Length: 208
Ligand SMILES: C[S@@+](CC[C@H](N)C(=O)[O-])C[C@H]1O[C@@H](n2cnc3c(N)ncnc32)[C@H](O)[C@@H]1O
Image (tube, rainbow, N blue to C red; front, side, top):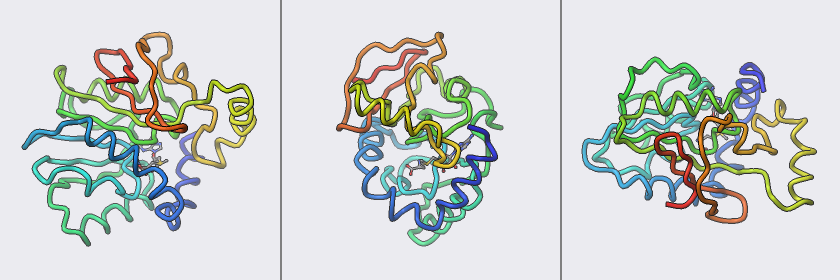
């Protein structure tokens, strides 16, 4: 997937994203925020924050930064933060997650919700998540991963050719992100479609 195709897809989605992807993806957002076990004052980065559907889930005691590639999605997130007076949201920035402008080890917690299958280069994204997270920090990902079921996985693979138009890879596999350098230790899922993953020192733990 090319960056311009991703931007074009989310420009199209922005108006109706919340209606289509709001409630259906909310269990995964909640699972990630719960797993973070945020402490007061934690600096949290949410990469690919989209329209900000997760913003109100975080405790008000954290300092939250969201970034996204899509201007149109971010506009929705900013409007949401203003409307609901989400004072824990320090910044919502237009930025490419492949090359973030934050210094190394800037955040206590780093989160990517339904993003690793939507970026051009998932392996580079994972490197960036590690770079900006403190060594004793936490990185959590929630995403769909291509099914092991031969029929469903086959259908997802078939839809893979439409990734540019869809704005995500329906046939996303962990190998796209791990690139041979990171390790998968355990497998579990929050429901049929989505898995929450904890990434620690280059190891992706799908059970935590
Ligand atoms: C499926 S949406 C998920 C949005 C949000 N996290 C949610 O839970 O609804 C994927 C988001 O990733 C963003 N995205 C894709 N590639 C990106 C990149 N390279 N840098 C930052 N954001 C990116 C898209 O613009 C889009 O808002």
